[in-house]
Image (tube, rainbow, N blue to C red):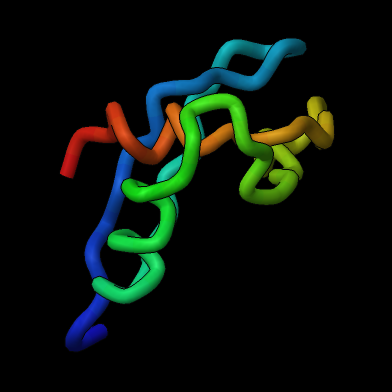
Length: 67
């Protein structure tokens, strides 16, 4: 997908430990990088079949992400 960046967020599912990987636009990335680290950006539902845990994603997870 053109124009999207794949980020491996620096956070892990509190139940199974798997980190999320998301594709976001450069504008979203810039907005998350300028947020305060503790600001909650959104929630994520784990994609591991037997997990499906939903948890909050703070801006710091995006700010320390691996591209």
